[in-house]
Length: 315
Image 1 (spheres, rainbow, N blue to C red):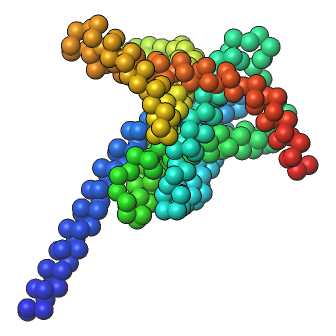
Image 2 (image 1 turned 90 degrees about the vertical axis):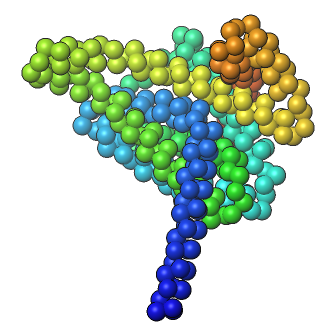
Image 3 (image 1 turned 180 degrees about the vertical axis):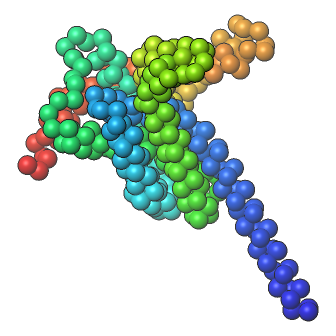
């Protein structure tokens, strides 16, 4: 009996440790996921364009293919790389974050430049549907890889526990949760107009039919707004990463200037709104800085990096 009691006591102790570890993982995952929110918003805003131009019956299968690629990117490729960086080259995390931030700035600035350029016409899906679908999926997975790398690196930098198994569990939870949330939202977005059309044509109640017509009418506007929200989030996150990274590397001037401006604006509004005013000012300054940096990177990518890549790429 004493042996059984001792065994039960050991099991209870192990269960307590496991529960504490689960709490640590959940808490760290929530913290890390919130840090990566900007990149998540951008991921959700970018993805719907990859199903544009295809038959409605192919929309969800395409989203599922991209989601599977995103799971592979995060859990099979990026998670082990992140753990190796944490264990053997933690000094490289900040420069890699800044490199990813610079890419976000470039993407955001390029979108704005193209939006105001009359030379960039919107292309429609033409040609062999299967080939186009595969090409779109592969392009989406490549874009997802960049955004997933940023999400996983931001998440890794936010983890405050040194245990590698906890870090692995946190990154896995963040990767799975974000992928499910992003592509679940994307699936809902791309099928919302079909749902609205069904409600408008088959709804039994007048309010249901009216709601369906409203969904169909407002979805293009919603997608337009979502695209610009994603672009703004891209520039904001990219600029914030660059500013914070410069501070960690020893140059605190940009961070201090932006903080000073935010505090000044905060004191110009009622005390209840001071925190919100400071956050909005900081995000705006980070976004403007990200846009300016992106404008500087565009010629570098266009005239140096892209031609060099085409030259070195295997035929």
